Amino acid sequence: MHQIFSRQSIYGWLLLLPAAILLFAFTYYPMAGTFFDSIFNEGSGSLSSRYNGPLNYQMLMIDPVFKTVLINNAIFALGTIPVSIGLALMMALIVDQHFLGRSLVRMAFFTPTVLPMIAVANIWLFFYTPDIGLIDSLLAFFGIEGPNWLGDPDTVLSAIIVMAIWKEAGFFMIFYLAALQTISPELKEAAKLEGAGKLYYFRRVLFPLLMPTTLFISINAVINSFKLVDHLFILTKGGPDNASNLLLYHIYETAFSYFDQGYAAALTVVLLLILASFAIVQFFFFDRRIHYR
Amino acid sequence: MSEIVIKNIVKEWPGVRAVDNVSFKVEESTFTILLGPSGCGKSTILRMIAGLESVTSGSIHINGEDITKTDPSNRGISMVFQSYALFPHLNVKENILFGLKVRKAPRKLQRIRLQEAVEMVGLSEYLERKPAQLSGGQRQRVALARTIVSGQSICLMDEPLSNLDAKLRAEMRDEIKSLQQQLGLTVLFVTHDQTEAMTMADQIILLKDGRIEQSGTPYDLYSSPSSIFAARFIGSPPMNIISPGDLGVVTKSNAGNGKVLLGLRPEVIAVGDNTIKGPEMEVAGLDYLGSETLVHLVRGESRLIAKLSGECELKENETVKIHWPASAEHYFNHNEIRPGQ
Image: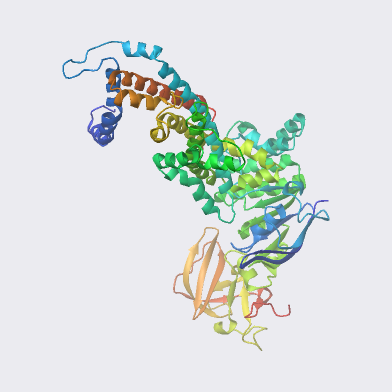
């Protein structure tokens, strides 16, 4: 008979304890704390904080900036995720082959991942600088007057999406590359003997076998699309007119520029809910259709 | 007609000559085995025939047609890989039909071929299973079924039994052999296991260091090995190679030339007491195998293994006399070439 507090299970609980403490202190307790903060308004030196129920959540509904950042974030996610995953797969397929200078190409593809986002933002700031930046200089060479990429609400979000893809794809490539190397070359040879072309092999064999990796990457990509905002500090600060503002940056501004902790907490709860629902859908919907070895 | 002819085939990688000027012919509907130790080039030859490896020089002909540079899928061959190369995400049925689907065969044909093939290899109950849910022998059968549905009359097999345990291996040997005869397949089979070669082959091609050491029927290779390598590679335990002078015997060939080596199969040696006529040796050890006993004999530098049937009453360190019929003697030169060849 197994008892919850038998001698054996006490050992078990003790072994779990360090991890449990860390998880509780740094994940679950802050999550619960955030939720409580979101239903109290901010106290100050003279006023204690008090319960204000769903007020912060009602405010979400009428906050135009919240609506803008949600839409922006959706565009940012849709713009970055499929392209960076597709690019990652393509790069992995390229550097999985044998050719001269393969290590060099692998390194080149992976370099953006190693750079801190702040550094990346600085590099791209140079690319995007109006008139004297790299892109506008190139365009000027062909006699085209380039736009102010980061200053124009029409181009700023796309400019940031391109940069994020450049930063992310190399990281995802590593996972695909690792997965490709576990696939036996005999499969490719067997398919070749049966008359399967490269495309057929990719569609029917390689891609299905890479699905677990694709799922893992796509969950990460979704999280990253909500999490990565470092570049906004350097490039646009969310502007112009919130055209490049993203949810997490909005939370940051609300909490630390406007000092509205309660509202920031409510925004955070929304962010957590969005991420959790994505993860659940991806996990439960795709998991059934994926072959795991 | 589905014969394979290999002419002066060479495979070189930078600094290595893996296959060195090999020529042979595989007759239609026969079972040919490429046999040799690891690194002898046997798999490379098979892969060149399959078109998975390019040929440095020489040519490959199937049915009289030069296919040295033909695409693998147009060579009219099927192949069974060492690890079976089953697609892990597809079930047994999809695995078997993979090739027909690629070639867009009509559904009706697919169904008929599938039915035939799975009955032949006994997989009817496992069609919906994934390869991971099958045993080694069943996976092997899926690979065979894939060959059968392909309808190709030439089948290349690259050590397909090496991942199976001994009992299953013996079973699959029989099955593959009977399948080959039933379907009239032309099979080229790579192995390093001489038992497989002896039991299955119509023709054995023994390779060493990328060259053909000897080729012929199992009987030819066993009864008249052309070199010490061939003599010791085929047969278990391997042929004893001794210097007759060390045993103090005079044989018809060492009378004039002391350099000639004597080869004796372990089973031709009779062991007995003083009543038999022959050199004296000491029993160094006994391996009891049930139906037979291997007797290790020493005398000075010379060592011999004799295979006696059933139990034997010899004891270690006992001195015995040995005898063999003169007709069972093989002679080899020190440079491994048989005199007169």
